[in-house]
Image (cartoon, rainbow, N blue to C red; front, side):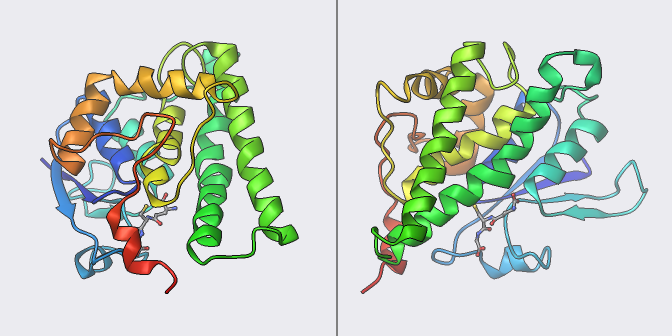
Length: 239
Ligand SMILES: N[C@@H](CCC(=O)N[C@@H](CS)C(=O)NCC(=O)O)C(=O)O
């Protein structure tokens, strides 16, 4: 089995394991523990980015040599193209859902994750909530959620349309596990479509299997309006 997927606990690399489970492909799973919050040396040794996920394909059927990639979107695209027969990705042949697919796929790392990251930093460093910059960041996060909720209201199912695609796999972490790093509560009215989506995805056997593999049998995915906060954040709270 040439494909090895490296996951770091409580991180966005859960996306890659979930993708592999949805596609039903063979892979070797390697888990790395945070040290204690950031990436351990074992992740840094794999790729200069020093971040998770990392995919190692050795030998890659594309190059006949070792391929190492450390960027979620690139790994998702690579696995779907090389091992997934194009499943879970849409193309122009899929018609009206294609532009939604491509937009939402890129919203994940282009807008949603940066918005979540900024929220986490402002809250964990105790930034002044009345500063115009902090207010603008909060607005961006709130309007991102509003847009996402409106899209889910339109489809009644997933981000591109009626079926799960890689666009969902890219965005889901920001709505779930990421909320364990800072307190964001969804509103049962304003975010009702997001909340229904969390339940819909949470029922998928591939998602359940991936989360158990990534975080252990006792881990409860953060699929409710309120998210349990991870203890590891105490290590980097301002004194
Ligand atoms: N844009 C990258 C971001 C990767 C990233 O920042 N991963 C985080 C985990 S969620 C990480 O490794 N953090 C630990 C560190 O930077 O020390 C991707 O999508 O793969």
